[in-house]
Image (cartoon, rainbow, N blue to C red; front, side, top):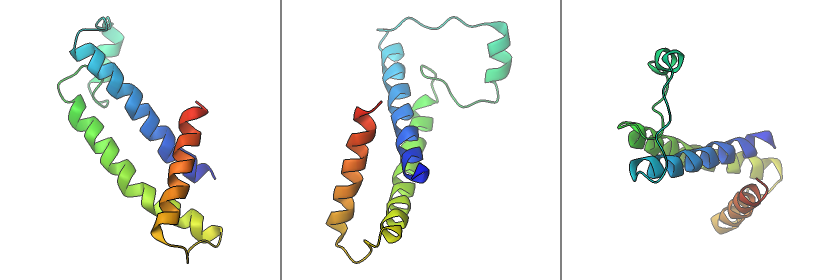
Length: 105
């Protein structure tokens, strides 16, 4: 079951970061203050919300999410004996799991 929750957690975190990025770029949110220790650590890290490369990073996270979600759901359906059902049933299950994750945060 943890394998089902992980992609949702990654997508939800990406959405949160995307909202923060939009707020920073539109100057709705104040820019975070930089510390010397953070600058050294941030050099090798993923782009942060508000940076120029963040949109590419966010897009890649969502592409990865959509690529992995089908495999995760199919594995779960096989485990539950639902492999013979139509694709629409799998989509319905995925949507139910998605809404449950969103509303239990």
